Each structure stands twice: as C-alpha cells, then as structure tokens.
Image (tube, rainbow, N blue to C red; front, side, top):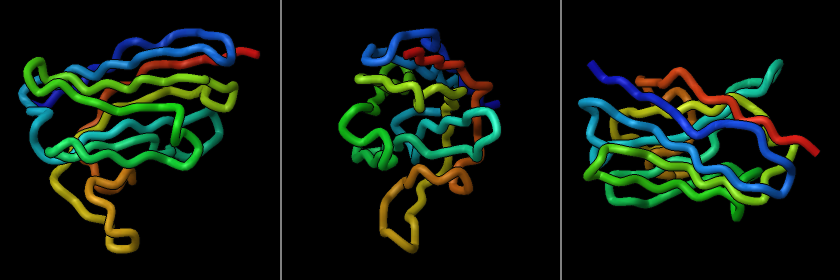
Length: 130
C-alpha cells in the first residue's frame, strides 16, 4: 500500500524558510510524478510544485523563484524548500504521487494539477506570521 507521510511544517515569520519532507513507502520517488499541493482554509487546493521521474520541475506562479522541489531516490523522499515565506503561504501542505501525465493544455509533464495524482499524504501545517 502506498503511503506518503509529510513532515517539516511549523510556524515561521515572514521572510523565513522551511523545508518540508515527504517519505514514500513502497512508492519509488524515481517513478512517475510527485508533487506538492497546499490548501488554505476556505480556498481550493492549489498546486505548488511537481517533479518528473527525470527531475524536471514545474511550479505554481505564486511560488516560482521562492520554492524548490527535489527528491532523493535512494531514501524515497520528496522535499520542498520554501524560502522568502509570505503570510499568503499559510496552508496545509500535501504530498502527492501519481502516474506519468502530460497536461494537454500546457504540455507540462507531471503538472501540479490535483486530478493527475491519486495518492495523497495527510498534510503538514505551515503558518507564516507577519
């Protein structure tokens, strides 16, 4: 059974940094697509970043240049380095995994779009204060 477990969330002041981790059991991070999503209270789930099997990455517009997604195939862990955090980054962050996909509209491989992912973690809370 695929299991994704996030960690690393917490409280930080604006301008600070956090690094999230996602441990994948039985699901090889070297396969298919993995991504980070987030959801703030009262808002829809938003794609943050995604990474392909070969390591190609894509990011949501609001985090481009501030966040970095990476993975370690050896220890089956997905990471999200978050820098220059803003209060709008406050949300529950979810790790997700899914089969190889390509978004028809944009051509992006493993796009950070929720419908392409079928395994989800329970989430980790990130709170950014001003």
